Length: 238
Image (tube, rainbow, N blue to C red):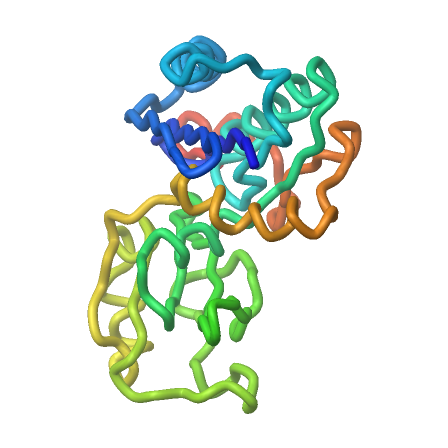
């Protein structure tokens, strides 16, 4: 199966291309330049692999949550390329991609959501399948739910959980206090990668559950899409 995956939900522009058993990747810190860089860098990746977009079987993208503009860029590019080449698409949760990228099995995934909030979820991997044990939500770090509130069907091992993502870098003290009884380590520098998105999307493509490009949609869990003038002047960002 030949697949392209992409993510721009953070400051990192991450791309991956799978051709059979070979994978080509391209990752760089792009910040606000992702919209200008993503299409040329996708072309570089295709040229490096000596393949055309029409030769692919589908496109996967980081659907969010994440930076509002970044999530829209990823969705828009996946949709546009999918339309142009008549390819199906799969949107993948960026928090789940964080868990997959970490290489761990018990993950508390947190991305900095700005405005004093985090995108937060808990995941456990059992028999190569991820289960969401703490629901995906945007919350104040100090209100993060305890692991005891997760599904009673999942095993809650002490000191077996790993904190992953930028939310841990910004709110490390608060989150570490809440999860002190369960936390084994913190991997705050992990970002949702296109390679992780590719691995998560492959079974969906294989099962024939990919969607037409027209149905590509971002995952928004914050209702606010704009800041007031005062908030912008104060340097806040969505």
